[in-house]
Picture: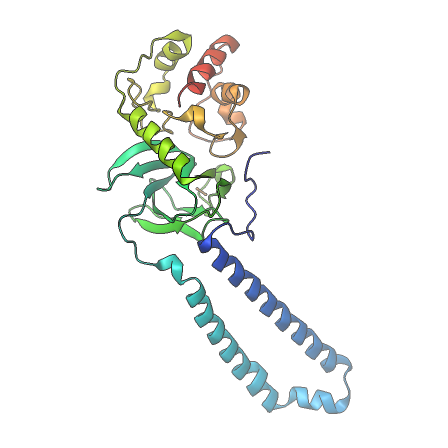
Length: 314
Ligand code: CUA
């Protein structure tokens, strides 16, 4: 079982999700009430006494229950719902931590932005955030429409090519929170998951410092060991980047920190030696139609070496 998966949709873990969850419950309760009243009216219409049936069929009831009641209740719910979820559209101050998440078929490109909006740390399929603070996400898409949804941390927002949608998420406590692409984007859409890990603020700062240092390291030895040599010679580097090495492909997920990731294949497998070998060997059997070709030519020994090399990337 993967941490935080499947994400419960009515178990908010922060201020943005809790307004939405409360609104959901209240709408559900009101809807349930209306169903009960309609059923009662249906019962009266079918089996009620003559007097009651006459009242039910009169114009007075239509004015009250058919026009006045929905008008008042729906207007009140609209005003209350907008007030309740107002924090979702608070203006962006500009000094918040900002992470750009780009929907790709069928994974998530992640970049942590500096104060000028330049990407300084690259990752994929996993977000790290500080607990107890709002984080601004810049959502866009590289191909078709996807939708970013981590139900315990915020609402759901489409990722649209050529547009930049801003959204806040917040986790009150450290933990791991699952997410899922919520807009059908073809092929393995259902296997486009992601993970958000919230850390205590001090741990988060440490993680970011370490990653910044790693991103700035140049000339990392890649030919050390069979795994590194295979990574360069088998064609992996054409699609994947590992900071500081000659691997600079941008088509697929950045692998600089792949050894740290909780999952593989965009939130669908736990990340360990065995799943890494299986993924490289034939990811098509795991996530059909994803864009990584199978490497069935590699021997078990070669897969082990590659997986060990990737495990060390953190
Ligand atoms: Cu991406 Cu559905």
